Structures are given as C-alpha cells and as structure tokens.
Length: 473
Image (cartoon, rainbow, N blue to C red):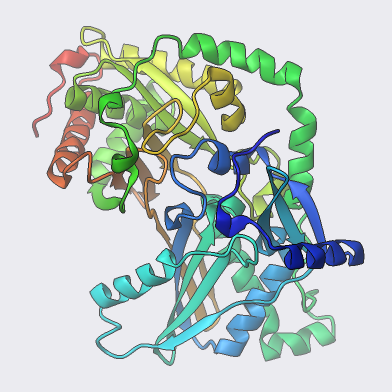
C-alpha cells in the first residue's frame, strides 16, 4: 500500500517520534495501517485531509436537567468504549499510519448563551464556528464537543468529528452511547447499580467488534484475487464514460467553501414514490435515483449519467454499535433513453444497482485500477453524489430528559454536486451541496424543481416515455 505524502502539519518532530516509541513500548498506543476507507481521503480526495470540509457535523438538542460535569463524564465513557475517538494519524516513511491510544481524555467546551446568541441565526453561526475549526491530525483528539446553554433545562451539544474516524452512521452511535452513559451516571441509577437492581455497571460495555478488528478482517478479505475479479467488472461497467464538467475542473473550482441548500418533498409526493417502488418491486432509493438521473440529464443535456452513492459497509450486526469510517462508495451508471418508459428505465436501474452493490470494492483500489488519480478540483471516477440516508438518527426520550440528533451535511469536499435525501416522517428532506464557483444557487434551485416535478410526473404516469415526463407542476 502506498499513500500520498503527508502534509507538513502531519509530520512529527524527532522528539515526538522518540515519545511515540516510548508509548509504543509501554502499550499506551498501538499503530495500524490506514483502513481501505481511510485511504480514500489521502489517496483520492481532491481536498486536503486537514481541510474542515472533511468534518462530519451534527448537534443534539437536550431538554431536561444536565450539568457540565455529568455531560463530561458521559463523553468520557463514550471515549473509553469507542476506539475511533482515540485515533490520530502520523506520517512514517512515506506512509500514513493510525495511532490508537489505550485511553483518552474527554474534551468538552462550555458556553452560556445570551438572548441574542440563542436566536436561530446567531446560534447557527456559533455552531459553524465549531464545525470549521481544524483538528491536529497527529495530536488529536479528532472530535470536538461544545455544550451551549440556552436555559437551565435547555442545552445544545455541538459535535464535530473528522471523517477519517467516523461516518454518518457513527453520529447516531455517538448519541445512543452518550445518552446511555449519561443515564448510567445519574445518582439515582448509581444507587440502583450498587444493589444490582438494573444490571448496569458504571461503564459502557465493550463493543462486540472494534474498528481495528474490522479493519484487520477487511485486509484479510481483500486479497489480490478478490480485488481482481471486481476490477474486471468495473472496467466493463465504466468503459467509455466521459465526465460532464471536465472542462471546468481545476484547482480554482475546488477552492473556497461549499454551499448548502435545503428543500422538501411533501408527504403526498414521497408516498407516491414509495407506492411506485412497491408496485415495481424495487426500492424507494431506486425510484428517487431514476428520477434524479432523468433530472440531471435534462439539466445538463447529457444522457450518460454516473453518480456515486454511499453504502454503510456494516455487513454484520456487531458493526452497528461501533464508531468509525466504514462507509464505502459505489458508482452507478445509467443511460437515460428518452423513448423508453420510466418504468422500463427503473427496472434496468434496479438490475444495475443489484450488480454494482454486489461488486462493491474499496474505492481507493478502484480508482488506482482505473488509473484515475485524485487532483485539485477532480474527484476520481465521478462528480456527483446521490444518497438516500439510512443511518440511525435517534431521538431519545427518558424520564426528565430528551435528546434529538440533527444532522448537518457540511460540504461537497470531494464532489461538484451532491443530493442527500433523508426520510422525515412521511416527507423527504432534500439537501443540495454544490460548488458555487461552478453552479450559481439559482441553477441548483432550478435542478431541484426539475427533480421534484419529474418525480411527480413519473409517479403519475410511470409507463410514459421519459421524454414525455413534464418538468412543470
């Protein structure tokens, strides 16, 4: 395995290397190679690993009695349980390695908000400040929690964690662990534990499979023969594809921040899409993706449409309780044929997704096999991300305490354009992420309208030719 050279901020001094050796010998730390998923950030991303665009962010609304000390102790229990929260990175002889600490100290900031700071607009800016702060990839920790107090029984925990040690699924795990740890720390429950009433201990139970154990199993599985058979599939699947915006790609397009825009599909439209999926024997994901690909074709004029979609990559139940960067990427390619009916295109897409998911492989290995290296302004293989988020977003309600997780899509660090959809009850939240140097917001708003209206038209008349689907309400 080879990795791109680390940035200067990631390289350790000789004194620190000596300290590292001492800690290795004492068992305070362990050193492991990067996982296949972590390698994507170093080897294929057009954005530097240390860029805040690689942060995954959320906030947790907490109603009920909670103190700073109780919150800090709860976070400490999560740090003790979750190996990922004790990981940092260093460069050693042209390789990037993980440092896994045997223990770590909980880090929690605190701030009491004025009435002006508690206003939604001001609060959003305060949270963005936390999310944008860079991490020290060598020293760690690679997470940050700020506790914002709006009132005695009203707090917000602002959470940011580096993508190299977490994915979207990990946020839900963090909140579940945090709430469990908080309940364990309450005085009344401590007494119950002391007499064995609730079967709880004062620490969270260990995860059934640590992140490093999963990584070791992955390295064992992805032998050259397994990779080779899948590379053959992908070379055939992606042969001849031409990037839509290649003429516009370059260092300048990747610079600066990324824009975020939110819209919603009402329950009536979302339920119509669910019903179409049921009738055609497919999934909501495929219905939404088929409509999105048609919309993207109308918007760009291209018929050959390729998107990348995330997969949880948590193939065993034991992995669902572990924080870490597990998620993979699967390219999905379709030819939008105007004279074919939407239903026929949907059936073809269904088979494509089945085949592509069955042949999923580490993206860093795929990009290398295809000879497509990451560069500023250029993500390997594809430019557009499409996702129907299915990771857990828990709302926790306990006696005297409630916690609600609110996700934040914070940037398209690797892609020109992204569409991320989340089910909110019966309706769908649609988050658009885009590079403003490539697309004015008005153009993305237009794409959003095309997508919504085409989906509605397809649900009304799925047997109509794609060319006859209307973009008008």
